[in-house]
Amino acid sequence: MKWGLLCQQISQSLWESLAKAPGSLQEQLLTLLLQTGSEAECPEVLSAVSAVFRHIALDSATVVPTLTKMNKVQVQEPETKSRRSAVARKSIHRAPSLLILKTDEWRQGMTLLEFLQNKKKLNNVNLLVPILFDLLKRQVLQVLAERTVSKVLLINVCNMKAVDEGT
Image 1 (tube, rainbow, N blue to C red):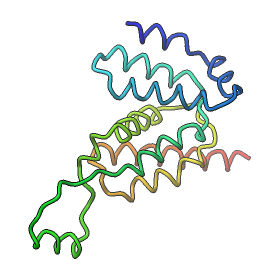
Image 2: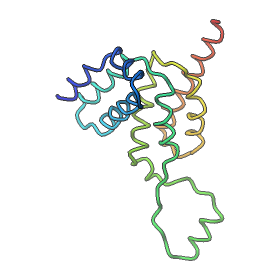
Image 3: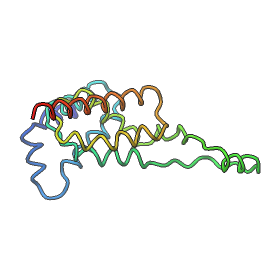
Image 4: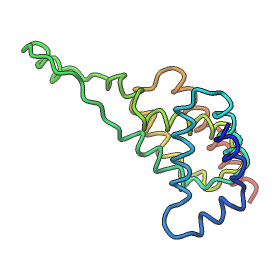
């Protein structure tokens, strides 16, 4: 309940004033919202965080660092002692571990992508395209994650094309 009340206080004017403040207060608030959204067990909390994302105008430069962290996250695989597995690791290119999907960076990135999927007020969309392609290249994405990244990428490319045609 407290998160719902707090999220209701985050308005467009507050968001814009955070951009003018020294430091990266917008990024810090974004990180806090994504942590809350990705860890929320209560649907009301997730709904409140989602409402904040719907009502603020986001600049892609603010969200790129979160997606970059998601893309760079590494997970240590459990070591096996057999010689055969060591040879197999060197000779066969394996996809990264699915344990990566359980990391905070990955969960927050997925939460962000889900929020961006239906975002209407998103500036500098062209900044998202490279990082979204990098995420697709990782080939770690489960079916749902891949669909979400693909949708956001497609929507943003279409928006860029529409802006280019309009000018």
